[in-house]
Length: 77
Image (cartoon, rainbow, N blue to C red; front, side, top):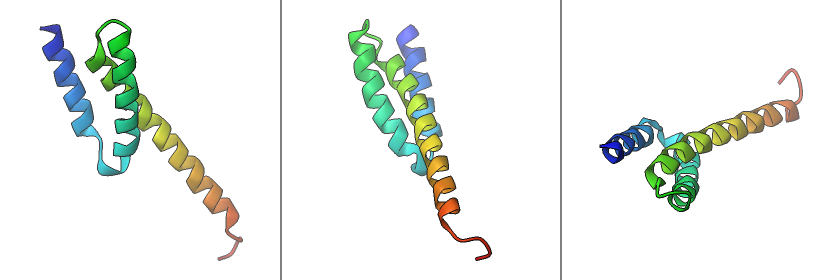
């Protein structure tokens, strides 16, 4: 029962992400899935958590990139 619930949550998390956020989710899910598997056979739970962390990091990096690009442009243009 627990595996079904965790699997459903992981699929929901993956389906919830948009195409722009897929990069961080996929990388995080792979790392989290492997770590979860070796930490006690909780690969799906690790993948779902990794997806969330990966999305957060990708969004944070995108914000920083946008801020840096905004500062590089001269004022008044």
